[in-house]
Image 1 (tube, rainbow, N blue to C red):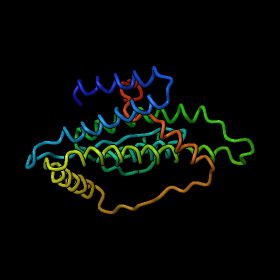
Image 2 (cartoon, rainbow, N blue to C red):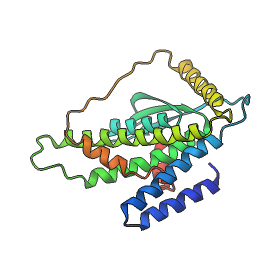
Image 3 (cartoon, helix red, strand yellow):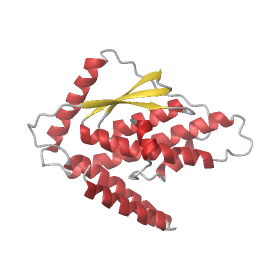
Length: 229
C-alpha cells in the first residue's frame, strides 16, 4: 500500500481519536474505511494484465482462537480474498488466505487492528446482571462484533466498486475472483461449508461495538503483525 495512502488514513484516525463528539468520530472512521476501499480499486492493474494470486497461512492463538480466526476470515472475505479455516496447528487456529497482493496487504492491516480492538472491547464488556452463562455471552458478543465489522467493510467495498463503474474495473474484479477461486480449488478440491452457532445473549452488544470499530487503523505493533503472518 502506498505510503501516501497510509499517511492520509493515519491523519483521519488521529482526528477521530482526539474528538469527543461521536458524530465526528463516526465521520472520520467512515472516511478512513472508504479510503482503504478506494485504494483496493485504484491498485487494480489494467484489463488484460496477468497476475497470479498469492496466499498465506495465519495462525490465531487462544484464548478465543476460533472466534479470532472467524474475524480474520470475514475481514479477508470482505476485501476480495478467499479464506479457509483449516483447523488447529502451530499453537492456534489456522486460516489459509488466498488473494492478490494488494488485497492480502489490506486484509492484514485491518485484521491486525480489529483483533486488537475486539480484544480490548471484550475486556471492557460487563455482562448484564443475571446472565446465567458469562462465557456464552462473551462468545456471542465476539460473533456480533465480527458480523457487524464484516457488514460495514462489505458496504465500503461495494460503494468503491460502484463509484468505479464504467472504468472497466468490474471485468478486472470478476477475472481476479475467478483466479483466486482456481488457486483455492487447486489446493482444496473438497471444501465443506459451516456456520457458527451461538447461544449467548451478547450478540447485539457485539454488533454495537463492531459498528463503532475503527475500520482503517494501521501502525500496529510489530509483535502483533508477526503473529498474523
